Image (cartoon, rainbow, N blue to C red):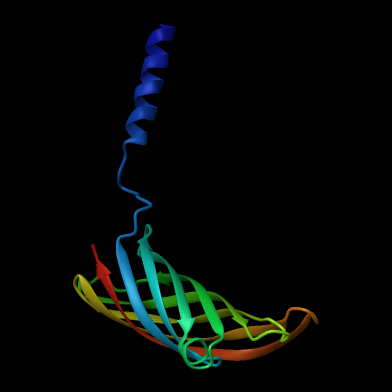
Length: 167
């Protein structure tokens, strides 16, 4: 009897381990541009669909004006969570939350600037496999100068245009 119970437990865990309904492999890739208080960012991202119409997105971008024209590296990472109200195959629309971390590494002997954002907005997408996306956000931002530990809070915005491709 003990062997039968152990065998049933082993088979149930083994079958759950083979469940492929959730995968850590991204289902969509995105490329986009973002107009913000600090710069114009060009970014690449991956989207992971979650349960109940939620989508998690991770993006990495570079500030185009400061990185390419002023020769100072201005990087940005975004974490986004979208909720889709519409249950359409072509359209996606709903609220979205964005958390960003930007870092500006200026020239020698200048303080490093870090920007943190927490913003609320909406997300709109149209298409089947290739989707045109647009999103806008308003929220709070903070700027920190690293050696002096000074921090400034202010309101910020983001207007984003992009493309996403579903595998």
